[in-house]
Amino acid sequence: MTRERDDVLHSWCIQADWNAPTIVGGEGAHFVDTEGRRYLDMSSLAECMNLGHQHPYVVRAIQRQAEKLCFVTAAWGAEPRATLARRLLELSGFEGGRVYFSLGGADANEHAVKFARQARGLPQGRIVVRDRSYHGASYATMALSGDTRTQAQVDPEAFGAIRVPPPYAYRCPFGSPSDVACGEAAAVAVATAIDAQPDGGVAAVLMEANAGTNGIVAPNNYWPRLREETRSRGVYLIADEVMSGFGRCGEWFAWQRYGEAGRPDLMTLAKGLTGAHVPLGAVVMSADVSARLEHQMLYTGLTYCGHPLACAAGVAALEAYAQEGLIERSRSLGRALYARLKALQHKHSVIGDVRGGDGLFAVIELVLDQATRALHAPWPASPVPLRALVRRAMEHGVSLAIRGNLIILAPPLVIAENDLDDAVDLLDHLLAEFDWT
Ligand SMILES: Cc1ncc(COP(=O)(O)O)c(C=O)c1O
Image 1 (cartoon, rainbow, N blue to C red):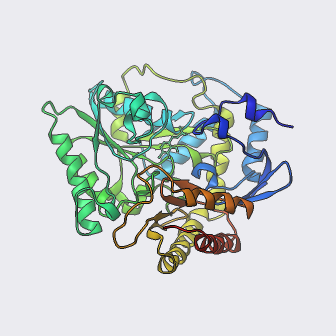
Image 2 (image 1 turned 30 degrees about the vertical axis):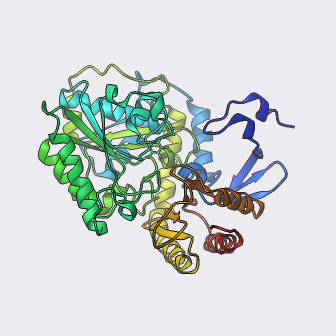
C-alpha cells in the first residue's frame, strides 16, 4: 500500500485532494496502475511523452550509458553530450551556434534570457512576454509567464518583464475582425512595446512560436511578423519550444513551419527532447549569439547540466523520432484529429472553437453559447461538468487534460489510429452525457 498520498508534497494541486492511482508501467500510448488498469494517455502526461511510455530504444540507451558512465560535470567532456549538441544543431540548422544543456524547461528559459541579455550587453535588459503564457514555475519564469495563478508571487516589473496581449484570435484582445488581423495586431503590439522603452532596453522577446501551452494557437502570420519586427530592431527572439517541439506541432520545432522567415535567435527545449524518459532541457542558440558569448565569462551553470544519462536518452530519442517517421506521423494524424473535432463542433453546441491540428496538438474551447462565446466560468477556472467529464473518461480508461475551459488533446505521437478514434468517440459520447447550461 502506497504512502505517497501522505508523504509527498505534490505540485499543481491541493494536497488534501490528491488521490491518484500509482502507475507502475506503460507501453506506447498506454500506462498501467497497480490494479492492472490501463489508461490511454491523451495528453502525453503534460505533453512530454511524445515517444510514448517506456520507449524500448530510449530505455536501452539509458541502460547502456549507465553501465559506461553515469556522470561527469560540464567541466569535463562527455560523449553523449557532444553527440546530442551536434544533432540538435544539425536538426535546427543553427550551424555555428552552440547548445547549453539544462535540467528542464523552466531553467532552459531562464538561461536563454541570461544569454540573450549577456550577448546584447544588457545584463538587466527587458524581456517582452505574452499574457496567458506559461514558461515555467521557477521565480524568474513565473515573472515571465502570463499565468494569473502565479503572478501574485513575483514582481514581474522588477524582473524586467513587459507583457503584451496574446494572438488569441477567437477572443481577439485587439478586437480584430479576422485571424490574420489579430495576428498582425498582436505582432505590432510587441513592436510598440519595444519602441516604448526610451533607452532601447529590450533585450529579447520570449514566446511560443505557434501553439500555446495555455490553449492559444497563433494565426500563421503572427510569428513571421514578430520575427520581422524583432530583427529590424536588433532584439533577440527566443522561441519557447519546450512543449511545441519534437513533432508536437507537425515539425521538429514549431517555428520551422515558417522556414527561415521564422528562425529565432535562441530556442528552448525540454519535454520531448528525451520523450521525458530522463529530465533534460536545452538552449540552442544562433552563431551570432554564440559569437558574442565566445570570450565572455559565463557566471552560470547547474551541477547536473548536460548529464550524460540524460544526453544519451536525448540522442536515442532523436533517432527514434527520425527512424519511426514520428514528425510526419504527428502531422498526418493531427490533421485527421482536427477534422474529426471540427465535425464534433457542429454536433455539440458547447464546443465554441477547435484549434491546432498541425500536429497531434488540438484544443477544444468550451462555451456556454456558440454565438456569444460566453464562458461557463472566468479563465482559468474549469467548468464543473468538464471536471466531471474528465473523471468519467478516467473510468473509461482514457486520461484527458483540461486547462480552464479547454480540453487539450496531445497524445503520444506513437498512438495507434484506432485508439485515437476511440478517444474521440468517447469524447463525443461524454459531451452529450453532461448538461452544459
Ligand atoms: C511552453 C512551456 N515552457 C516551459 C515549461 C516549463 O518546463 P518544465 O516544467 O520542464 O520546467 C513548460 C511546461 O509545461 C511549457 O509548456
